[in-house]
Image (cartoon, rainbow, N blue to C red):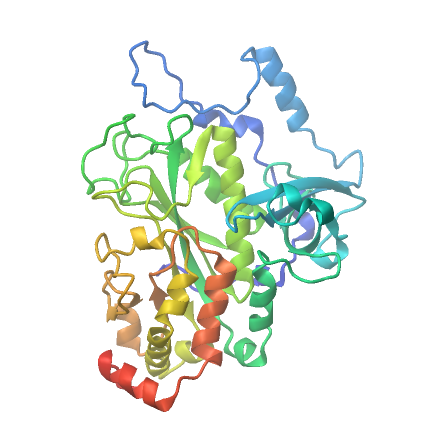
Length: 432
């Protein structure tokens, strides 16, 4: 995350007026994703990416491509808004489209909408209506033009947030004056695994078998080391087009696993950008015929898991003398370790074992440049006496609204007793 320098103005959740001038992710742009198997004896484990689930005749595909790539702007002011929300599992994403009479620049210009909550596990059948409140908008990289993606949160008809709406509570924390005065920045490292569609086995792995041991795959290049680069690159460009503050990407330690970084983002923006980036990735893997997995330990054994390391700083941490503020934050985090672990993603106990660049889920630890700790502080932060900390505990399937707001709450709003603080400081060798 060293290349992330400053947050974007996108945190005001507006889109630029010249969005119609950019090019969408057209169907033809996916040509490099079509992996053809020319040899009869090709491995069963090879993934075949397809853009369309239609007849293979070129004429049929070309007709569909032509319709998908239609530019509506010369013919109508109307735009398509894709309303996106989090489903009943707390990790699945749902969406549906509606026509808006004219281009918009802010979510307040959009109408509320509703959906059948009984079909997403979020409402009973006899009272199934759930209301969508538009909260953030992004340019649509799939439709292009003035069309938009809309991140929403969900409420009952009476205006109460439903249980899976974690954004509402996060927004309350991020609008607290103590928090806004500290201007919290977040840089989130989202790891994910690509799976072959029919066998749910990592991309590039022989079906039922294993590749060579870890070592050559991290940031590697070559057909025997990098699996899914076109998906990663397509996602990178689509996020930039959409206005997501994506700052980088790389291949990960386990083959078939990738990471991208979003941030620094200010406050609630971090959650909005991660959720929208996940939606775009789901859509790209859908088109490529590959399954996206956010499982924190997709393959058991001597293979790295998938995390969502969260880099965090406040205004006080970034100023002179900030290292003392960071140490105080680490102390607070140690005292609420169990609270954070319980909110940091399902199945995380399979990942946080003390191996494969993780700390034990049962023990809080911190260190400088130590990737085996719960909290890592960079060498540059130690040297400069100010900077940021990295929380390495969140799983790849964590809810960014929960993780970011909990970090802000624990380090800015929550105060431990003096006795607990003293004991924790002694245990962690923190001279605060």
